[in-house]
Image (cartoon, rainbow, N blue to C red; front, side):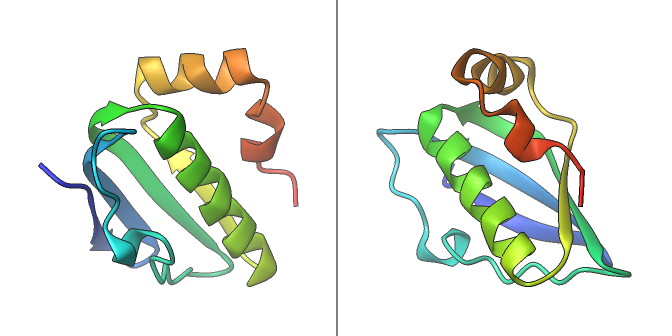
Length: 99
C-alpha cells in the first residue's frame, strides 16, 4: 500500500501506508497542504504499516514547512519502531512542541 494522508477532522490528519527506502513516495506527500485550525494541526501515525529513515525525514520536513507557515504540527500515535528511530537518531527535539 502506498502512503497517503487523509483528513479525519478539521486540523487532524492520519498518515497511512508504508514510507520506506524501497517504496516510491507520492508527490502529494512532499508538500501535503496541511491546513491548521487555531494555529495547530495533528497527524496521527497509527496507520503507518512500515516506516524508516525516509518517513522520519519526511516528518522533519513537514515540521519545517509548518513552522515556516506559522503553525504547530504535532505527531500523535507514533508507532514504537518510529519512536525508537527518533530516539536513536537524536532528532527528538525537532518534534517537541515548543513554539
